[in-house]
Length: 460
Image (cartoon, rainbow, N blue to C red; front, side, top):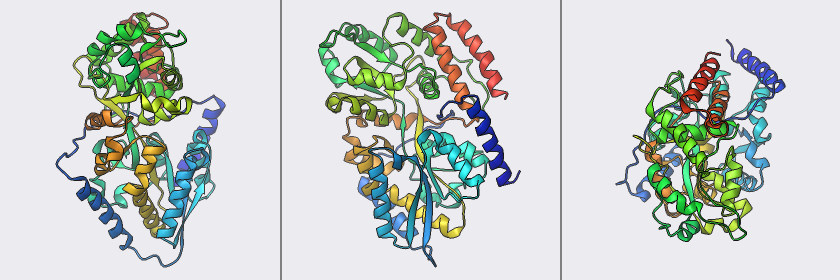
């Protein structure tokens, strides 16, 4: 099928989906682990990143001015807009022959809008968005493999699991800008009130359940109850991703590398037994979205919960003083698991609109991934782990209360299997969680019901 036919076919799918009330996006599922070299000095490696960028800037001679068409929802969002406008200004000052032109749409509409633009003949050189968008855009022929633009040496400096999450048919089609596994955020003040060491969070599910009664006995100043542990189970796709991460922590699996259902394992069942126990004891607020958990955490009513690192922005917007009591820890290890977690990334995806466009876009991506540009963003705007391994070792990351405690979780983070129906699949995972909690269904029966529904989704 030609690129234009694929784009038009996708547009038809989007229209039909919208008419049926489609839901939002989130990434996928697979097994890939990272090992971060600890003997490499920060200055040496960050210098290597800088040298690679400087070298690339001299590799290509632009014969005329170039404009990069950059699809970016962030420029419409307060707090993020300043970063992107400053990045545009700084890059254009460094490369006066290259201009950045933002193409904007709201977050929830951006994926559809990119397909619409390309289908209408508009060129898009760069897209900022979720890694989960890659299969759709790659299948439409909109994206180019990043191995066609970047050297093997440059790509080797990116965390393998982050790059793995960019792959379609074994080839990466995006450059992760920053990422986060689902990590555990906890309230140090509540730990102290419960007589617990605020610098020693639980490392396993058993340890968490052992201290949970002490946290559950607390009340806020105005008499509200404190929940010991929060796990989102609401009927939204990102909750399914969070549940997948919890399954990983138990050593379980959900999908095989080729997109087949893979739930006949102890870790999968133990995850939902754990959720049922949390619910039976009143430790986890029922059917909560991540935004609900962030609200409870901000107000001192939730001691621990799973979130992506940038989710703390939602906490801070409710209670700016939360930065004084927040700390992070690696995800809990349950059953035979080792606390592995699902990694998700905010990603830069390239179109191929000619050599000059590709070379200019490559320079802009490399500029964004430098310490001077990216680290202030991750410190002050969107807490996250930089994709370049070297940058994770600098004080701005290692001393961040939101990032520091969970930084080792990058070593065992796992990426996701890219399937077109991941949103519907994730919703079925939330339905399973609700079946064993709200509906009090037996775990085995609920899993059998899930298997039937999930196989139907995967066969479409």
